[in-house]
Structure formats: structure tokens, C-alpha cells
Image (tube, rainbow, N blue to C red; front, side, top):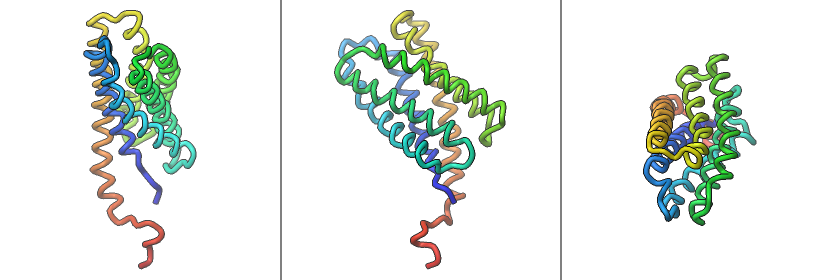
Length: 192
């Protein structure tokens, strides 16, 4: 049996997108940005750790390692660097530029998941990736070029929908994994 920690990665996405939606909606204009750093940092650390492990070890079958591992690493790195920028009360501008390229990758992956029927719920997963990518692409213009209240609300809605999709997939996966992995034992305990 393979190692599957996709559940924590999905819930990390949920936390990250809810935090991002709340930040854009009500915190982006705060004069002191440092209060947002810890939340972004937690999401970033989990994303970088799980993403790096997945891309180097390929614990999952098929192309799940590419779709989920690489995007989680990009997501985690963006949140980790954003947390540092927020901690030092500096601009997120260059992080937002990088996010555009990560966002395009997420949209491509989402479209391909739908096209190839990857995952048990390809339409839902694909839409989750596409909306996640859209938030990454929209952050720069909404944060710096068109920081209007309606634009922030639209951004927050998109981020919350992405979070809800990942929550549905993640919490369903927890439910299923607790059953399907119930009889699993590490190699050191097998045969006892």
C-alpha cells in the first residue's frame, strides 16, 4: 500500500484559500501587515514540506504526484514567501507576479484532469484547480491595479468557492481513508 497524505495537502488548500479570501476582502489595506504573517506561514510550511516530499518520492500512483505535489509546492512557496513579506511589512508585488505563472500551471492541470478523467471526481477536481489558478492570476491586478471593493469581493468569492471544493474533496478523502487504511500496518509490524 502506498503512502497517501493528500488529505492534509487538501485541507491546507482549504485553509489557505479561506485565509487569502479574508485577507483580500478585509486585510490587504491594513497599514501593519504583520498580523497576517503567521497564518500565511503555517499554510506555506505545510505546502512546501508536503509538496517537496511528494515531488521527490512519488508516493501516489499515476500523475497525482505531478498534479498535486508540484502545485502544492508552488502554493506553499507562495504562501511562505508572502508570510515573510507580510512579517517584514513589505510589498507582495513580486510574489504576486510569480503567482501568475503558478496560476497558469494550475489552470492547465485542471483542464487536463477534466480532459483525461484523472481522479475519482475529475470535473470537481479540475474546477478546483482552475479556480485556484484563477485566484493566483487575479491577485496582482486586484491587489495593485484595480483594488476596488467589488473586485475584492469577486476575488474573495472565487477563493471561497475553490476552498469549498477542496474542503469537499479533502474531508471526503479523510472519511474514505480512515476506512480504506484501517488494516494497513507498517512493514515493521507486518507478520506479527
